Image (cartoon, rainbow, N blue to C red; front, side, top):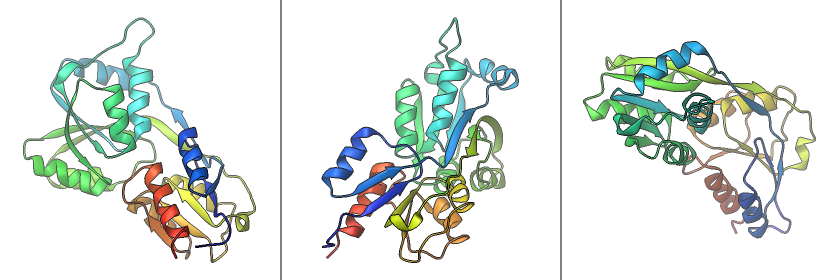
Length: 243
């Protein structure tokens, strides 16, 4: 066991329940957001979404932010709350994104889930009956999912509903034993003004974020078993508490 409590910098906000859990597990977490989510609300996107409310379609989500913005800024209009009913089929990432779908679209059918975008694309193609999808995403989305779907002759309609803006902050990186990263955008924002000591461990929420880290840093990278903040904490606890 280590003699001191590990100090972790988390690059996005965390639920209070997770911070309390970390304290009980002997891990001290400092939160400093390195990105900010800005909804993109446009008449053009609404004009596409509105007719789809009464159609049987497949929606794809790789971010909880996309789910929440679709609900709060498009389905929830000033005078009406639109409910798509059971016609919408959903394919999404596991963990936080899946939780957001269940919360915002409980009446919809979840057809496929996966731990990362590549696996999700493969799961969608494996369904065999999907010919087109509506990909609700951010402005900085990765290429893997739409590329794989298009290679399998699945039409991808992209509806961009948010952007992930960098909010870099210079800090004493040597004060931390580990850093939690949740997206390539956060990786780029952090390293735009900071460097890491060789001993600092980077914890990535998935392979895509880990790949972004490998292009910038040579530090040890640990990927969580599932794409959630709780899984990242579990990975850090297991690493720092190992004999």
